[in-house]
Amino acid sequence: MTTADLATDRFSVVLREATREEHERTESSRFVAELLDGKLDRRAYVALLEQSYLFYSVLEEAGDRWRGDEIVGPFVSDALLRRGALEADLSWLSGSRWRDGLVTLPATQRYIDRLREVCFTSRGAFVAHHYTRYLGDLSGGQIIRSKLRSIYGLTRDGVRFYLFDEIPKPKVFKDGYRELLDSTPWAAGERTTLLGEANEAFRLNRGVFDDLSAGC
Ligand code: HEM
Image (cartoon, rainbow, N blue to C red; front, side):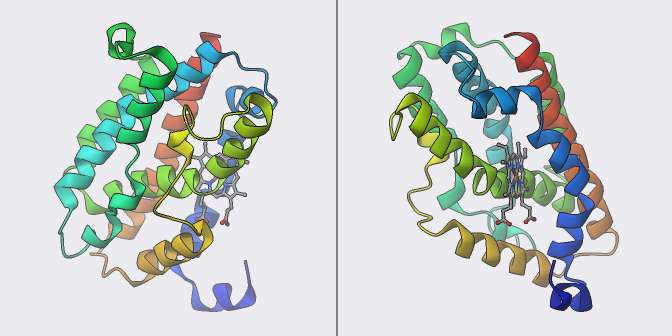
């Protein structure tokens, strides 16, 4: 954090600081560590994509709900959408009948239930979940992508989830996203909702990693 950030008390900075601890816990999950170490087999990687498909489908349905909204509509960007990429990866890795064996893990169910409970009615909660996943995909996700390339030699097919063709410069996009967080005319209490729900989003993601680890 720079002195200027502290002086202006930017909401995006407050959010990053408020979720720092949960982020650290999440990125040091056993499943994530094994993924980065190249210790996961193909089945575990496919399981990660399957669970991601399930919760991204609901997150992106919520995005459709808010598309065009005058307050949070600007967060909804087609360049971020991951559902189609996950479908393509799963078809490539498991064949066209990949949906047949799809099992929703208990933690994924809890995640989906929470998304349905809060993201269709609360702008702050929606952005909390949107931020946690997509800014993560554009940050740590890109580190995972380079690992998948060096460990498994996957550059496009099977790792489309990590490729944002329409976002050539993630840093520029993330800076714009943070400016949006700062300039959005949030209603009273909405920032507090967002901060609490972003921490919840990290915990829910960690739950999915824990369930995936337990199944390995
Ligand atoms: C492989 C494990 C991970 C690593 C190495 C990692 C690393 C990073 C790094 C270096 C940043 C800072 C990027 C920047 O300032 O532009 C970042 C930001 C972020 N990460 Fe992660 N991350 C990981 C996993 C995750 C996971 C699993 C999530 C969520 C489920 C997540 C959510 C976020 C978010 C929301 C940000 C944006 C913070 C902000 O600037 O407001 N990360 N991550």
